[in-house]
Amino acid sequence: MAIKATIFKAQIQISDMDRHVYAAPALTIARHPSENDERMMTRVLALAMGWPADTTQGTLELAKDMWDPDEPALWHKNFSDEIKHWVDVGQPDDKRLMKACGRADRVTVWAFQSSTPVWWAGIANKLTRANKLTVWQIPTEQSQALAAMAQRTMQLQVTVQDGTIWVTQGEDSVEVNPIKLMGPD
Image (cartoon, rainbow, N blue to C red; front, side):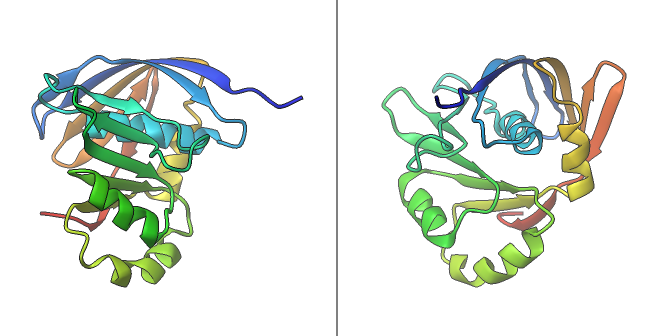
């Protein structure tokens, strides 16, 4: 018998003072059996950081990348089914990212593994034409601290100010300082 997805529920309060985005999305996360807490919490952080200021054309949603290789971890599709924002989590290859840049208005990658510098050194030169691409690295100790916050039911506050992200749940708080590897200033 196949192992089923584990369901997590998260209520997120987003206060992004850098972009003037304030929202309170509720998530139901179907965590694939091969996905760990670190990757799942990076997806949640990516959703909070990519939440659109204008939601009249839809919002960022969790996609089925672990089940369907043609989908990202998250995406923002408008009501005409056009992909406005494609978000991958982890270390996708250059062909996947170039294809995503052809399909979406904007592409973002959130890398969190300790091997990110090695991955990036091998892929960066192949992405010079990808002007729609932004790549972020979350330092490993910070992504692992996020993973420690994972619970089946979560109440998260994500606050962004001056490029620093604070993720809080109850009395636990993690400061995240993502490093931009590529993208517009």
